[in-house]
Image (tube, rainbow, N blue to C red; front, side):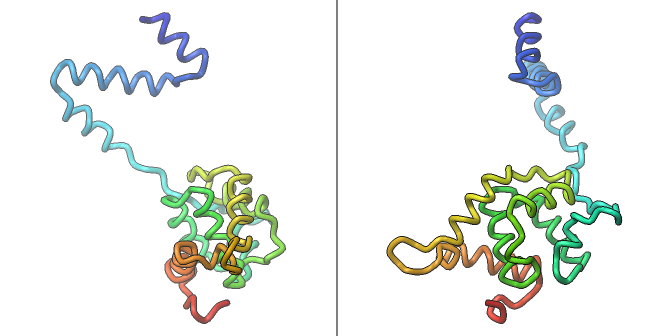
Length: 174
């Protein structure tokens, strides 16, 4: 058993922490202390997004936004904690561009890198996935002659970002 576990860790299939958690779980199941094991995991607090305080960093989210509002950056950080998929970040990018907060010529790759640097605790997907999603949103729908971002599901997500995160009226912005 010890050789098997050592091989799993060496081949990077599992980390030591994962194996320890699994073995603790199995021991608690065998001893009938499953509730105690579940309560031990609750004590660990979830990391929250922190804004980088480095004023010399010219490539941070605060300098990238047109309004330079730290409140918007904090709300984006709070929103990003639960919205980490590529299409979610693409919706954020489109909402920022449509509201005038972000320059449309800003490359998606740079935007994702700055988001990752500003909120290092959040696990944001790779920039390629976000690029694909932004390109898809900005393409025309095949048979309807309108942009995919204007489809109801995407428009709802973009408008909800505008109202909840950016705190603007989506009807007043094109």
